[in-house]
Length: 353
Image 1 (cartoon, one colour):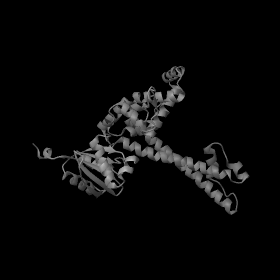
Image 2: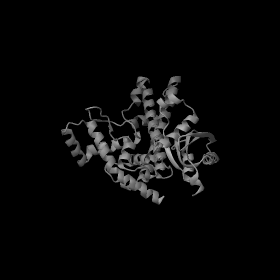
Image 3: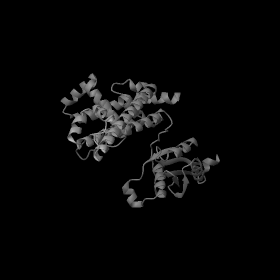
Image 4: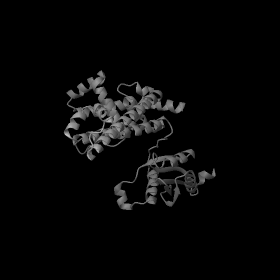
């Protein structure tokens, strides 16, 4: 028998941070074997893996934050043939009982793998889904900053002298910005000089963010048409909603074992809330909220414009369901319909990249 097979299996748990990772190792019976802190460098990853292997046969590892601080370590573990599982941070009730420290959190991550509680396969972050994620992150912040800029401009105009407010205030944001972007000096008084420069700067910021959003939307349009053609052909699916769903699914399609898994990931699976003689389900408030919003948008478009969905809405309305309840049902059906297209696009992308 091979020497490695004779070794006892050990499980590595890692609490990840920006500059330092803390690992803890337990064996197959749950016995704690030790901890080690290493820097977040390629050498530190090798040191942590080599140390864990001196304690036994390392086949599985539970890592916190595989999409952020732990992404580099997750890649290093995967490259060495070690199964990596995503671990959530311990809940507050458990922390109240055992305390909080990096070694305790690392040991808890290892025990989550041993107990079978940690089952999520982390995203690989090395394909088109990662590219779309980066673009959507930038777009989300640009939308927020653009809205903030026009809100600040209008709040300043509200308290401006009446003559200036009446001249520059417009209902449409574009018209309001156009009147402020090339604004000449409103007066020689100190507050009027500050008002002029502030309105001009906020208007220029709004225009800059508008151009930035146009560029980001163009990139999303191009990438989704190229790498998610099946998804884009479906009714109500635009570039942003397609990108959001691909990002939620990730670059490794084997993570999505069924359409029910995708529904749970997006937070549109109804959760059982029955007790005694009462049999009911409740709304799932978990999952990926951006993906949940994308499905809500697709469902809303279909409920307004698609004949098939409109007929379904009318049927369920006659059964006594509210609009919110019908919308939740449509969300679930949308996931069921889009799942094979998302999977097909991810698999074809993985083969071509």
